[in-house]
Amino acid sequence: MKLKNFFVFLLVLAIVGAGIYTALEGLEIGNFTIKPVKDSMKLGLDIKGGAFVVLEAETDEKGESLKKIMEQTKEVITRRVNAMGLTEPNIVLEGDKRIRIELPGVKDSQEAIDSIGKTAQLKFVRIKGEKEEVVLTGKEVKNATLGFHPETQEPIVSLELNNEGTKAFQIATRELSKLPYHIQDPNDPEKRLVNLERAIHIVLDNEIISSPMVDEEIPNGKSFISGSFTADSAARLAALIRGGALPVDLHEIQTSAIGPTLGMDSLRTSIDAAKIGILLVLLFMLIYYRVPGFVADIALIIYILIVVLVLIGLNATITLPGVAGLILGVGMAVDANVIIFERLKEELRNGKTVRSSIDSGFAKAIRTILDANITTFIAAIVLYYFGLGPIKGFAVTLMVGILASMFTAVFVTKFLLKLIVKMDIFKSKKLFGV
Image 1 (cartoon, rainbow, N blue to C red):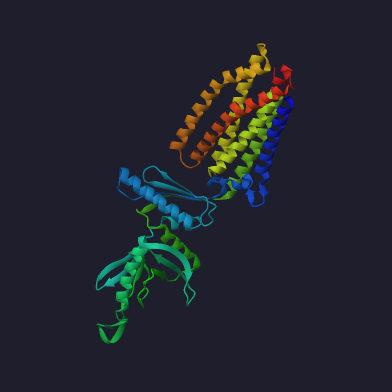
Image 2: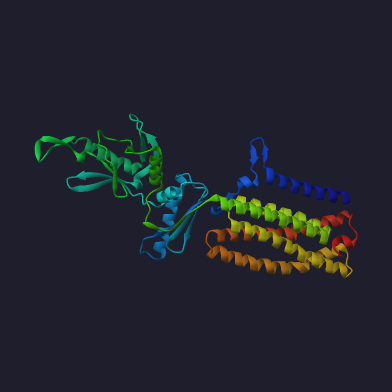
């Protein structure tokens, strides 16, 4: 029985050691790969650098109507950001009419911000006499991609229409293809002018960007926009069209570009400080509480692994306040163990055996631990609900840390202590801090 407990304890140590190695170096077994923590964590704007912009909607809507408009606007901006290939964006609503967009790692911040904020109202228009008739809008565009003209090889925007758009475009091009290419100039009967009624004008944000002439009926719902495009500008326009039109006009309230140097330096400094702090805590617990301190050290390492894995699993973005939340969580995890071990020492001083002291010590400490952690958890919920950007990151890491510390302090520490007692190796009460 003692040997069995000893092997179980060794197995726990082996699992913890494997977890530490995997977190630091990663793991690759055949096609199965686990990235190191440093490569799996999403870094926030204040660490990685990039840009952020706060946009405000120009609307008089209120209540549920305003809420619906802002949710739609957020969805459109999210689609645009994803279509532009911008990585790890953070897009959140601020207040009633504002949207905050954070773009970590963006190099050309102003270009990205300009593209995100455009209204991108696309129309295909034909002219009938003096009247303008809208043939299509961006809503009928199923897909838009960068392409190249088959003859000139110039960059174009290739369009694919949905069923409704295909029918409307087929009817319009059939009618236009039957019109003459040229008409007489009313001021000069001998002069012939291009018949603009035969063209379809492509209008983006109330500006004509292309006016191709219709040569034949287009029945398949495929067309393209040509003009003075570069490959980049055509790709950006395609992304805007795919994203769709914003339901409301937006104007910039605040814009800023942040370099990564300060953030990365601060991150390295924070990590170095965390390493030193955690090492000192581990040594203190081991020296002051001895066997229980050693158990607490194992539980603390398990706590750190759990928190990191959960944050990666949640796809959480790590900011500098988030790092502070992690470090604070480590202190709270140790604090719970200190409360338990002090209760354990009291029971041992009262003459109880080690086994009974563990049970009664945990039982008496649990209420204090619950009270402290529940009140802090409530504060973290309030911070998350009312906070913005980095404050939310701090709140998330704090909440995850509280739950993980409760689990490791109450369950893991108790399990390992009882396992050591059953091994019947450490009998002296001095080894338990008395």
